[in-house]
Image: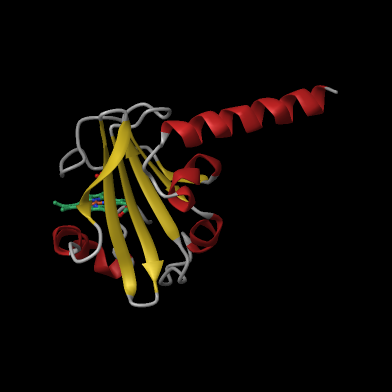
Length: 142
Ligand code: HEC
């Protein structure tokens, strides 16, 4: 019984989170269920500065996070800034066949809107993340 109540609560929370991330593709919006791979000692500067930041990795990415190898196709890494239930920024990196694909969502008018990155607009993100090329373009990876 306790178990059932607990799982009902978890489902309710997941639904609430999913609804709160309106505008973010579902496969990115489920980051709340993934492993936190970095949340302390993140560099203070950069474009996503000023608020608590958390980096999440989907199961595929989490498995290889510390391996030192390039992450496999299908890996998704999400960085949020600000409150966990209503982040002020959701930055996504998804490993596709041709390499990393970048998108950044910001809240606007009650939903999240793709503001940077996205189809044909990768250069801003790539330009900076090339600085972490040795770690498969991921700054927070060990
Ligand atoms: C000026 C440099 C710069 C630009 C431009 C930039 N990033 Fe980042 N990014 C960083 C740094 C530095 C980190 C490490 C964590 C931190 O300090 O926020 C990071 C971390 C991340 C992470 C967590 C994985 C990691 O690398 O550790 C994601 C996801 C991410 N950025 C996505 C994006 C997306 C999407 C864009 C383009 C819209 C972008 N970034 C543009 C510097 C940059």
